[in-house]
Image 1: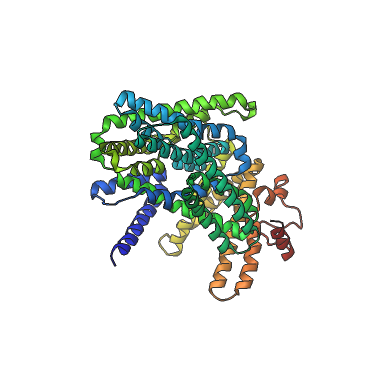
Image 2: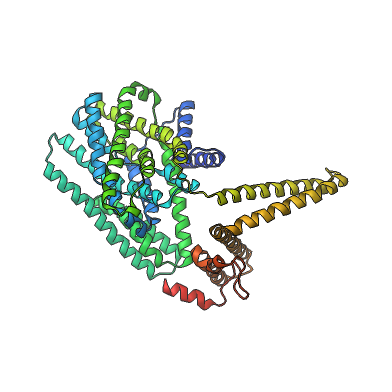
Length: 550
């Protein structure tokens, strides 16, 4: 009942705080990760929180699932379109960031050049988790989200490789440029090649299996195994996980059955949520505000260096990439502004700062305070001002039709809810019958009028109609799946029957919206004889044929 019990209790407490923050933040306009950091700061101010967080905890426990989940969901075809700017930002861009930040700190803050370069390396990796979540929530162009997220995935690995090299040479007191370049290429290329190989092997195994529990386990082994094996071989563990996730998310996905695909996606979404929640909460808990205030001046110069280097890298390499891209593929200037301001720092910078050796003496505390200061600034200032920036640049892809639909839909939902509430009061005897009978016709007429207007809005936009029809079909199918699970729990159907029927439901859940709604796209009214939304396949052979082709 000693340390293990305390550790489990601590984890449960952290998860409880994360859950409460997640519930509260749904009603607020601040990013979830920012709210977690603030919650950690509030807890620390109220009651000093003694928690020893080792860099291994971040790098080995939390980093692989975060990186793997993000890479698993990236489509290689979409990534290929912007491979040049992403490679420039995540490769040479990291080196330029280190040099610019290091140069500013050396000249303005008075840090020695080795210490300044060490800090430049550890702070060079971006962590735009809250920014990407905001992108998805408010509807910015999908390509911009892929650009920002993919760069972050790749620059994590290159930043860690660069940090290890710079720290090693600083401690040794000598630097060999040729050897450093060779080590950088070896560690980066080795990690990528190892990850590609492991990802391909696991994808091959998944294609020969049909058990969602085993296949989910294999993806977990791949995420952690790629990192640990690459680290043991002296390669970049992060780049190995990135490569493995990309291959497994594109090749391995095609070998999964519909049920497996849904389970794997939900599993990794949940794991990423847990990891992100604990990491950003720990960032807030680890901050020592009195120490940060004592080092306010170097922290300020560090923030200036990070902002200046980010702008230089994004606009410089963005302009360079645009010179070689087709006109239709060039990155617009507003996107570059968002990418520049969205270069937040987070878990990687914190983990690398905590991993600094004690032999650095007083410089170790200073570099850690600077890292915490920059992370807090990017999360609390840049993270909370990203939404206004996106709105000012008019990057939200919302048409007048979509806005009209949302207004009418919200109006109809609220009036129906209010009507049902009033009717319930009438049935309970709290509203006189004469009052209810007087109000009822007017409320019903209003609901009918708004319903007609809403129907006209939906049918005026084929894309909106297809989206709403797809949502309704999927809600129908999820409810159907839930009912089958209830029947299984009550013992009314056997496991074999449950597996067969859920496979039929998952067959439709797994289809793309375009495939599901193709008949509806041409006409709002389905032709006679066609399957209604959410209908089960006519025969089991359809399911078996589909799964064999996967």
